[in-house]
Amino acid sequence: MNFFVIGDVHGCFYTFDKMIQEHWDRENEVLIQVGDLVDRGKHAPQSIQLARQLEQDFPEQAYFLKGNHEAMMLEHFSNPPSYNWLMQGGQETIDQYKAMKRDISSDIAWINSLPLFYDSDNLFVSHAGIAEKSRDPFDEESPYGILWNRSKLKNLNKLQIVGHTPYKEPAYDSESHAYYIDTGAAYHGHLTGIKINAAGEPIELIRLKTDKRDL
Image (cartoon, one colour):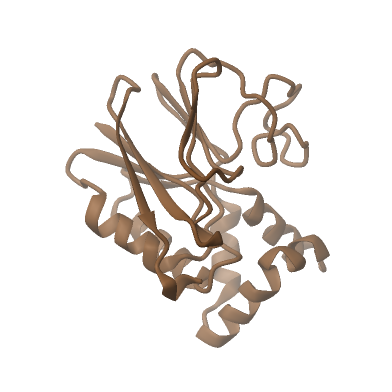
């Protein structure tokens, strides 16, 4: 199977749904999303709802990873309040849940179950990547950890794909053999998807301009 990896969604449900409906080849691709489904855009609950439905419908083919915004959301609900999360879009996410009348506790439980990475023979996908400086890349609170890192990525001898740090366009670092695919969907930018073959080679980049309804 090939892979289709989607960058940070940040509540941009209409853009996310269009990316799935128009560009995911369900017959031939494993879907992976790098985390940060919530906050900043106008439709965080709908974005979570879509992800959960896809995971349910395609249990061996659709994977959603934890991002730092999901981690902050979990912290808020386990040890409230997280002012950091509330100031970075969390309050708007709570307000959206109230307006939609969606059960946030069910989604919190689902978010708590999300993995930190997707790993195959030729591909490693996570929210912020495996950093050269990291002593424990899976420490969820470390600034060099897999949820928060913005430093140089380690070359894993396989392709790394990450989100987290927004770029105007998808960026490839040949030294780290890593693709950065957060293109600021919630900042009047684009949502990026990248198609990877089974050998870990990029075969197509897709950039969708963010739907105005998401902003």
